[in-house]
Length: 433
Ligand SMILES: Nc1ncnc2c1ncn2[C@@H]1O[C@H](COP(=O)(O)OP(=O)(O)O)[C@@H](O)[C@H]1O
Ligand SMILES: [Mg+2]
Image 1 (cartoon, rainbow, N blue to C red):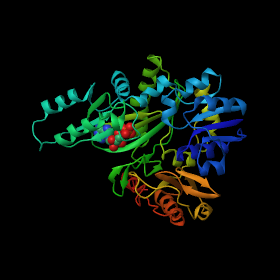
Image 2 (cartoon, rainbow, N blue to C red):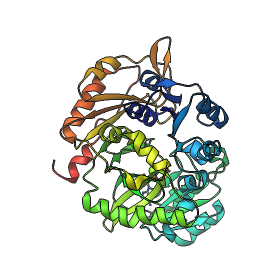
Image 3 (cartoon, rainbow, N blue to C red):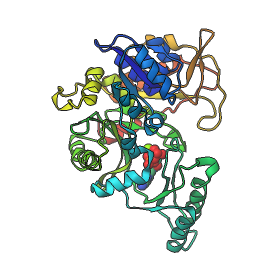
Image 4 (cartoon, protein in one colour):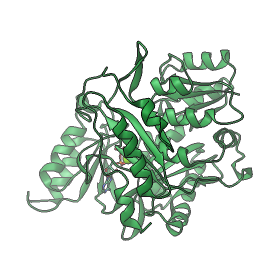
């Protein structure tokens, strides 16, 4: 079977790499891909949002499975477009992808399905949100435990966690600024600020059966000790003891099952990856948000550990047969992914620096270097984004996997390369290994 992966990040490199290992896979194409996907699969020069050209390519190349990586094409209806042409495609419909594309819709589903989540209110414009804040909080010194979220997709920049009134009022102004957020901030969610550690629980569902993957943990802040500005994710590891067996079944019962049923009832059956962003409070796990695709970088350590054939899993999802597949098989060993980034990221950065030491890093045992922002230029792999590589290793313990991942990181260099040094350290605090 020929397979098409749509997207160009570390997640898509991991997907193409894992799908390519399937005995069912013939050619694996990635559109548009990066330097890493060009080495492990075949790049196709079509943008992830050019549905017409993607469909034409899939038809001409006998593609039997298309896998959509990022949220933007899903929210724009790529799955509906492929399905209308009779092409098998893995991912949620446009209507189901609203779960990520609209935080207002997500909160409504959570509330109606009685899923634990932060209390909230929706505002249709900035002035009513500011009036709410000023009516409720009268001084600049008191704690204002609010989180303010733009409704629409904002590439991880649409959420501001507030601590005082000034921050909250400024957050409203910022998120409703059309210049920065377009229409994403035309509605706002104001919600209660919760306290706890975060985990990602990613599940595959065909709208009926839910198959949770192993729990993972991302590291959003740029710098060590979870300081500095938020990023797309500076590293991840799996499994995490923050979510043990008992909590996993609690999440299944209280979060995943009611959500999938609610989506079915509202005639938006959910098929694809349902990613619950969770915060573990002292009242138990609560949902911060849903994503409708794999997390990047959580996908990298997860797929390094997954032994089950991904083509079988995705085809069963598309065909509504998830109830018939064997339980997932995992490598019990933990995997750690360290993101190497460009100087300046998550702010502005330069591109085009040649990357050295990739072969040396990949020769190390139990290491895979997934590419994110890279491209080939005159035979050289050069930097082409903020997050450049996801250096991933598997090991007998979290510490062993971490050690190996950083050993590989030390082989790789380019002008301005940097990474967090503490990826997975949080994992050691949840349970002794
Ligand atoms: N209610 C909340 N309480 C505390 N922190 C929150 C809350 N909602 C969001 N956050 C923080 O903001 C981050 C981003 O919020 P999220 O809802 O996941 O939006 P997105 O990923 O689309 O930016 C979360 O990972 C979490 O750290
Ligand atoms: Mg999030």
